[in-house]
Length: 260
Image (tube, rainbow, N blue to C red; front, side):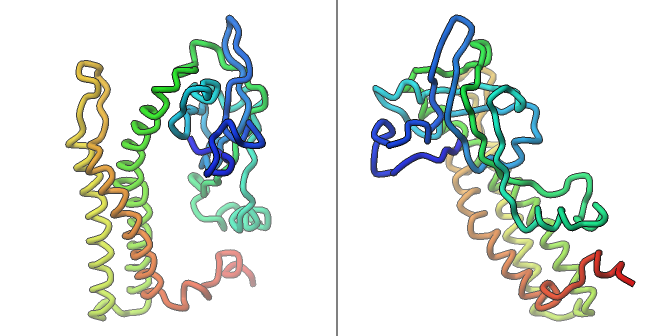
C-alpha cells in the first residue's frame, strides 16, 4: 500500500519524479506493465505473493496510478531493498543462530519493493484506471488493518512483553512488591482492552455489499482498536522498562554467557 510519494502539498501529476507512486506504463492484450515502488512492506520478500493496492484516492488524469494487482515475489523486475538494522548486524556477527532468539520465526525486516517494468497478466489485475474506486480499496484495507493491528498484532507483542516482565519480577524475587504487581495489572488491562476492541470489530462486522459473501470488520470498533493500541503499546513498554530496570540494558547475551 504505502509508497515513497512526492511533496504532499502537490498533486501526484506535479511531482518531479512520476514513479514515486506506482503506475501503469504500458498495456497490451496480455496484461499491464508497472513501474514505481512500495515502502515499509514488512516481510514481503518471505511471502509467495504480493498484493498491491493504491495508497490513496485518485482523480481524473491519474488513471495510470489507479492500479491493484497480485504478483509473485520473484517476478522479473522486482527488487527488494531491505533495511539494515541492528538486528541485521547482530545476525552477521552470530556464531550460532540460537543466539538470535527463536530460529524458526526470527525477526522481520521492512523493505522497499522496487517495480522496474514488471509485467502483470490481466487475470491478476483487479483495478486499472477506474480511479473513482481507488479510495474504496484503501478504506477497505484500512478497516481490516486497523482491526488486525490493534486487536491481534500488537496484542501478541504485548503478550511477550508482559510475560518477560513477569519473569524478571520473579528473577528479582519481587513477587510481593505491590507497585510491580500494579504495573503488571495495568499492562494486562491495556492488552485486554485492545484485544476486546479487535474482537468487537470482528463480531460486529458486516457483509459488504450484502449478498457478496465478503465480510468486513466494523469500522468504528476497528478505529477504536487502532487508537487504543497506539497508546497502550508504548505504555506497556514503558512499564516493562520500569520493572526491568538496568537489567534489561546490562543483561549478558547468550554469546557472552557461552564465553569461557
